[in-house]
Image (tube, rainbow, N blue to C red):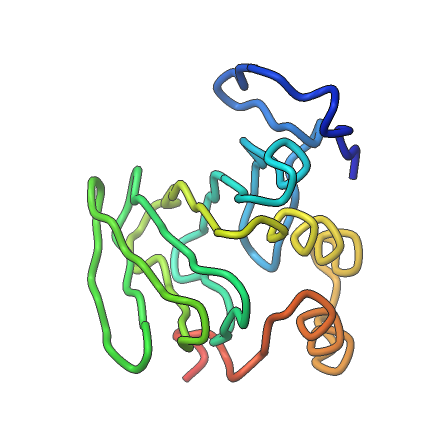
Length: 164
């Protein structure tokens, strides 16, 4: 990851399709573009744009130290937050407070897009490491995945919605 020293960060713009890390990340079936890195905010927050393939989504997990907010740009999603199912489509907002188990699945027939903010930052660093550890097509190894989750204050709790 190309970290940007905090003293070099001022106002900036990220063009459509752009990424603060220079290239998109492949994160277990999602394409992630970092729009505002945790380095940009000196760790205060991170903003990413995620593109999720139809019927894809992350495993059930929780963040011990971060709140997470999604704004649905395109598509139809099913979220699960603390055991509650939430349907969300373009224009909707979904929030998961730190410590709550959560996951989601794109339930539409086309790729979906979300704008995701985590407070405090750091999710971009996790995504970069995850993308490097498991490039597209690589088999996921649960033990390595769980170790990486733990390193970043996350906990892997179960499979994605589509695998249950």
